[in-house]
Amino acid sequence: MISREAPHNVAGDNCSGCDSLQGRRAFIRTLAASATGALLTLGASPAVARALELSFDASGERSGDEAAYAIPAADGTTVDTGNEVILVRYHNVIYAFALACPHQNTALKWLESEGRFQCPKHKSRYQPDGTFIEGRATRGMDRYAIRREAGRIVVDLAKVLEQDKDAAAWAAAQLPV
Image: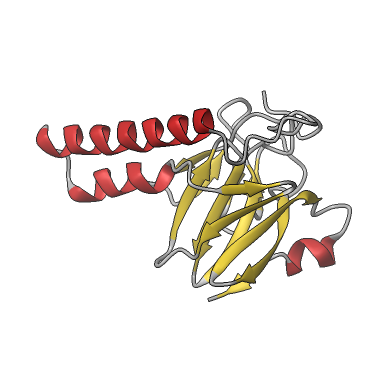
């Protein structure tokens, strides 16, 4: 389970530039690229390989309570497990979501074939914009406040917006591209 109460970096543990973090990220990128190559070699379609690449990426640059990402060039989903962020470009609008399901904090999964998110624990389902469809959850996926800065998307990890507590802020947490 992922807890939003305990941030990824423990207070006082600022690893934003340390070699071990960069090494881990490089390893994960290499691993994902190798898996994609293996899938292509084994006959997987390019669409399957692209889905793998879009569904996992550890490239969010963290600085304090913010993470910055390149603006996605096309509609798709990027999951940054290190910062517990899901970055989505859907119908030319960008959203940043907490990785955890709002029901019981289980990491959400993107179902490429169905074009939606789902909680693997209790099967709550969400549209790509985070809107709740059905399941045990009672609200949409938690969004982060985001802004565009210097050609990047900056996610404010300290501002988790819950649809049922502040519907206006939740609805405004998006950027058209």
